[in-house]
Image (cartoon, rainbow, N blue to C red; front, side, top):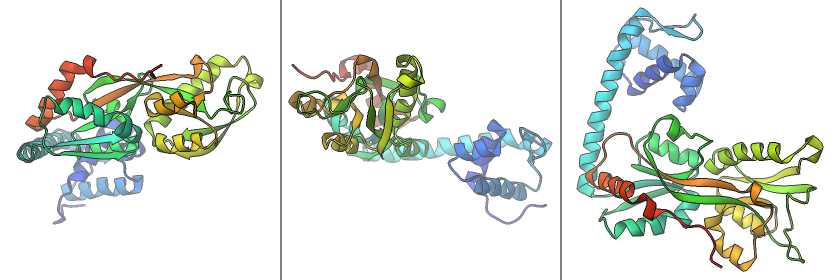
Length: 324
């Protein structure tokens, strides 16, 4: 093994840092969002570039060799310096453009973000605002790749997200509720309801959805709390899966099944009676509306927005209770 003229790839350094932190190729590859074979090739390519083995592959968990132990702090310093340089360069660009970049999950981009941004713009002139709307996992990827300054999404204290695991600063802007809803039957009662038992068609969120992650955690607990034994548990059939609460809302309004939807998204339907609550209060899931920011320094405009939000969080909370 020996150094080659092959150019050094920054991804190799970041992969090496991730492997040193986790001690496991599979977990490190997952944290870097790449396939393990490709991740292993990156580590081997870095070793070839260095000209020495950096990883003791015979140990479990894997450990650094003497060369790897000496190399690691230098790599961390180089990556940190490059990241700081990139942040400063991008901050200068952002300052010149005086713009803001947000990743916003689907339903919040419709029912919360426009009004919240309008209130901020009354006190801040952000210039151009770029908004990318997608499911939670895609929005988190935009944040970790530093393609946006802020992430607006739902969260729950008992269900840590990737943003929480990576210690991104956050502030809670308000709250919402996931209500189990159904179209009414001819008698004005829920067509599908957990409280009556029997087969229940459920419209569920995908695993890539933040609401899906919350529901999978919270519903599992609710079933245990409500059921005395297995025979008493509601018979649930997941008949439709989607990333977006907007799509699940459409399917619920079409009478395709029971769905847990953000109350802020269905206020009009609740008022008109086209959707009604399909279970008692024990089945409602309270959720946070959260704003995450980048850990490193941002443009002056972005920092002003964050300071403004931090100072006014209480007054910016969203009320999602339907009007009488």
